[in-house]
Image 1: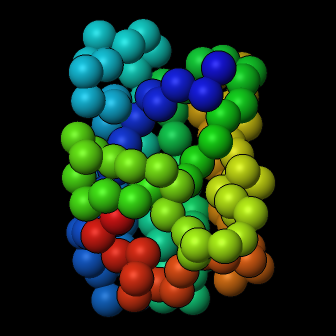
Image 2: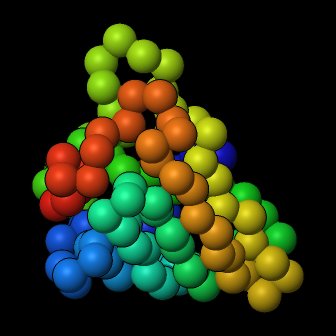
Length: 120
């Protein structure tokens, strides 16, 4: 239905990228199942995720949002004047509620480079 279920901030640095640990979206701590997992953005601007606790055999969007905390998360984070490139990025969960995949953000028109995505 488009509801936000989880949030993470790309800020835990490692020498080859940034990692975030997904947690339930603020105010949804009693969400069942409860989403968790890792999101990684490498220096080549490839976004990779390994998630669990998702609704079984389902799908949903995965995006970088404007805002610097989950509590103040705004709309999708992309350049003005282009069609929202984040509408194309989705996870698909297995029968156990797990999902993993990656997307090369440099192939999506309007996404920002690595250094601008950090801390979102």
